[in-house]
Image 1 (cartoon, rainbow, N blue to C red):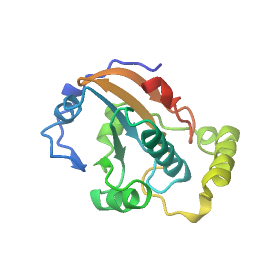
Image 2: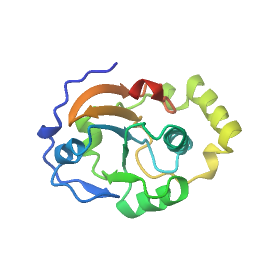
Image 3: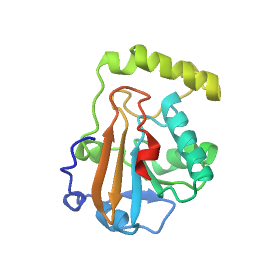
Length: 177
């Protein structure tokens, strides 16, 4: 488990959110839910982001008691809408084009080996075989150096965190339930 020393009440910038009533702050948004998962996507359109979103969609469909999920991405609201219309229509997402949330949550900047190393290669092959996603066929939106991150909040307080160690790294989603 990663460092839990993040107090979202300290993040005071306005957020751009789609899919729920607007919130004055990230803290207010997260406090709306008894339990909520905040997922940072690397790049809209990348193989690993599409795979992660589809994995979570399948999990939520098979286990409706899994906590609500809010995605954070580097694209605009419009780009996020286009992405989620294709992969999980109606999903809540936050646009963070200035990357301030990524930095606030200490999302890791991957080294070359983390972005194109063996673990990433094998995860890409798995995505290709499972979903037919090809790395080279998709336009990606965002900084490809940033990795992903997943954070579980209980009544607005961070209780669990996973920062990806390589592109395509996903937590064991069943731990969040």
